[in-house]
Image 1: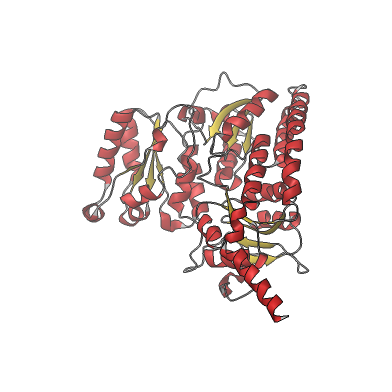
Image 2: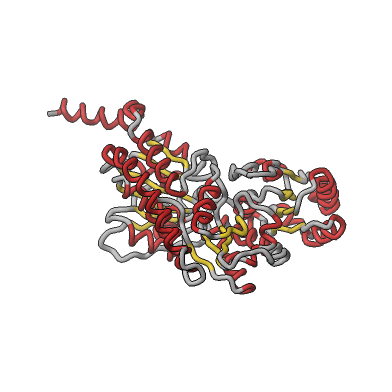
Length: 461
């Protein structure tokens, strides 16, 4: 596998070829490997942060709050309390004598000042060590203020980012079932696992509204406490980022009998399939919903395909690498790159399961590298080996690409361009094209090195 691969991680990397698929995943990160993963606390913040009318208070050192401030860049159509990052700023004295009193005072002051609809209190590593009783403090404040104050048991050392997703889902479930559901239509859904980056959830909601489907709650992009409280009245949960919110969907199915389906809004194929699957679910109760959905997809594709063709001509045969947080995005990205004529040479995620990687194995071409929980050294090695033209990842992957002279496309927290929906596919193709075809790469270290090697070989001849 090469000198840049730790021997202990050999089983978490698979090269698609003659050997049958076999891969280890969903396990703790290798100590010292500098995994791209985040901690449990960060995972919980990623999920809950976009609830816009809630107070988000980090019980711990100030660094934890600073690290996760505005972590999603999630947009709101109304309140923006979530854009503020509050912390109890625990000091040495608090570690010795406990921080419960400080937490109580912070909650009371913040609730009185900002009048939130609810509050989430995040536990960090140090709180788990000193043993502050978050639950007791939250119950006391909730009784005194009359709003839900929910502890998020997200001590960073308990596991990895995926465990943080579970902690967030448990916190959300405390709200579910406490609201009024009298005005909810039988043809209704909750949107789970979309975080409204660049306003994407508004695009998806519009599609469902054009189909005649009521959206009860966004969980959690542009989310509202009151909507989540009554989300148990919806007939179906539609789960995009399955890694982050699948646990909540399972809890709601067990408790309230609400079925769920996994979908993706990235790329033409997956976007259309998601709409058709929802329409098919409700087709018995609304016989016209499938007709409306077909018309929606037909109209969107009629506008999209001619515009994609000009990008496809230039990008045909170019190579891409993908490394994202959730494997669901990787599936759609492989298909999206194929649609615009590009080959995927590397694909991986931070939190994929064996089922996820098996699906990636099935949809990728021979020679593709599939990797779980990678690190900068591995990713750098793979990008150079495959000589890719663009790397798709998040904020932590960007420096790797630019240092190697490879184009980069942000598909995570910091992007400002919507990539979901049919319009998102056009935005994606446009960004990939402008990046890959930019003349700047002729002057990058990678291209210069290749050019120099070519000149040396000619001189040798």
